[in-house]
Length: 175
Image (tube, rainbow, N blue to C red; front, side, top):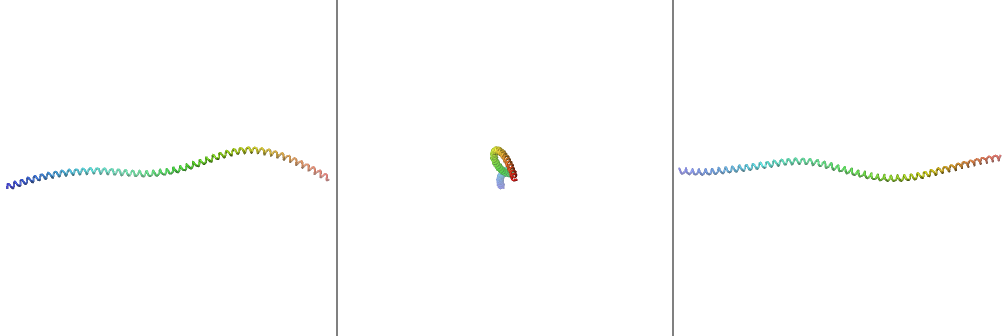
């Protein structure tokens, strides 16, 4: 019985030794599991922080995208307005060019008209001289014609008086 007890005690000592070794392995496994869980938790927390940062950056980029889209719409409207203004400026320039050309043509006509007027003035002055000469010639001709008429009237009156005298003489001779 003692041998059984000793055997049981040896068996119990081996079992205890095995149990202690199993407990040590379990504690080591538990410690390793806790360390792994802590590493996993730390990695999770780190990835969670990175994800939160990414979400914040995505939100920031989305806000920036919305702002840029609004600015793009405004820029497109400004570009359209600028293009319309350029078209208006081109039309105004074309009108100004046409007006300048018309003004240049008017200036040319004005210079030609001035030249024509100067020539007409010279011609009028020459005609005025000729008219004065013609007036003097006419006055002379009128004076000569009046002298001739007066002579003719006097000659006619003398001829009438002579004819009357002859008629009176002929009537007296016929009586």
